[in-house]
Length: 481
Image (cartoon, rainbow, N blue to C red; front, top):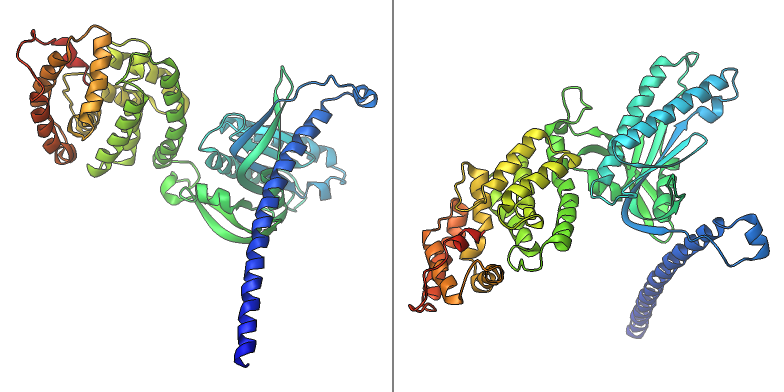
């Protein structure tokens, strides 16, 4: 090839590359428009379905309003009892239908156990969703756990049911995680109709699955792979999105089961609890945002977030276990929630709220007792009895050794001053010097991170103090944490 032809060839490749890039941009724009149109289409369909035949004929404009909800992360399961349609024509078809009803009844119980929403049954297909109508972080794990239990139940049914020597019952399941649109149906007895790409993909995965398999999409796999043994299953083409990787779920990983190989053990629930903590944290921070008194400039949402973050940092550095981390972060989350009830003795009221809420999130009575002890350890003056209590005490007063000490300290002064618990700023500065001088961090991690800066704070505040002020308030010194 001569030089001129080579240059022309290079130009053509460059033009093609540019045209390809432009096409890709247009395709992305079209995909976005398509998703928007699909969303609007689902809303219009739901609106149309709410009309009576008479209203449709007469074209009346007065229609019942349909509530449409969007969930950014839901996990959809389709389960098909394979073989039923082929065998239902036999003489014992009524017995088979009765048994199928019993199976679906048990599936309902399993869905309820894992707090999943049954969407509908169509013939021998069962559909449910996690993360609907209550949003949560654990729904992919919940749905896979339910799928494994459904499979075990059907295997037990197969053993006990007379199938004339053949294998009658086989279950195949498809699971996918993604956003869904939900239409709320009914007033007294509310149900949900979910639609969207996530639903369609879960249905296609179920169709692609072999009998006896629980097949999940790569999206679900990434969210559950730490808990379950999975094997690569293959690819499935998805319109506009390329190939979708799929995996077969074999069961819980050995480190998360009891000796029977199926029952989740304590390790499972601890790791699961660390994920579910995100949901609890969202609820508590929302409670604090709405219910804390306006005069709490220091004991606010930011302080709680700071303490939760700091206990995790110090905790990992101190080498605590996963369960200890769960207890510690939970205590940090609740340590100031008692302020929604009363300023003084807020630590105690925090334990009252914790005892009321934590059972709903799977905490045991023993764990709740330990969490409440950790919360009470933040009451000043600090007297921690163990490592976890030392960590939360250090995290609660972490600001004493931080570079933002002065602005944070000023918010605490403003909070106390507006309640009449402290006088002038000069009085406050004297109190601060006295408090910091007598304070000690308990953990090696906190001492190495904050002790040097703490000494600098004393020097900085001492320069601001004048000597012509009355005696400082002893009570205010108890409100630092």
